[in-house]
Length: 165
Image 1: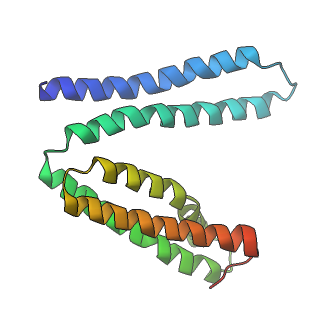
Image 2: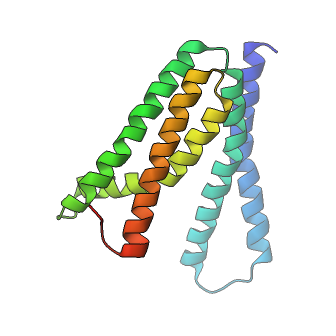
């Protein structure tokens, strides 16, 4: 398969993802009775659309990563970016409880902590597609770091009710 066809296939997948999500949200809206809370229902439909689009976009993303397996420089850069992103997790976990004023840094630290489970899953998926042992090991280490940050945030917020550190 040529490079142009691979690119077209991935881009077509990204175009189909929101179209399929839009179709499913429309079907769900037809099957649901009108609740009288139009704004709340519209927001729920928006969240469903965004979630389905993200779910369907995983297919062309995995396909693009598969097509990029022979490109060594891409995997080197991706591995470095994932490792750097994973390193921000413990920093956010240490910084968030020490910020007492609800400002932008505290908000960004909280968003980073809440995104840790999704990043752990993403790093794991990319590690499974990685072509060589070294990128796979770094991505698995990033996955473990994100899983630890997720566990810390879960235990601190939902079980203990306060930050442990």
